[in-house]
Length: 216
Image (cartoon, rainbow, N blue to C red; front, side, top):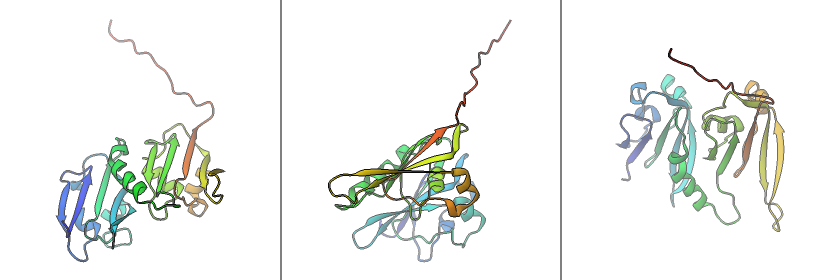
């Protein structure tokens, strides 16, 4: 299984495919018809084994850009043993990424933090996610399926683990406006390993509770 690439997740025909030199994601997923209904086109993961010892690297993939503009920067070049993971917009990613998270935690060397981040609160699918290259807060929110309707975007908290003191681990906390980050990407915050993002509920937000009476 050296010269293969693997397609998994929310597709009609997952499995192993022959790898060829110069192959890109658009050669593996060339048509929207390969994807099931409710596929998340804004976030997919590419798992890659780096030589010489097979250390795992994780890259974020925007399938919408790949399908619309094959051959552009978003259409990443594939290498042997790459695994492309595609998700649904309606189901949790927890099971799908569990194995990958375990690999990232296992390969973390002594004194280094695992390439894992977490999101809690009013994201659609909160939990742990792989830290992809250059991942920002808004990209983690995309990974978690976006925000729910009651999400408070004016103040998002980033909790960051500080290991500069060998005697104790400390968390630092900073808040910023997610609305501003969506409007101006330069104000977005790049994530570090083990960062935790917390998104709160809009103050005084209440879902409407109803009772339905049917029949005669």
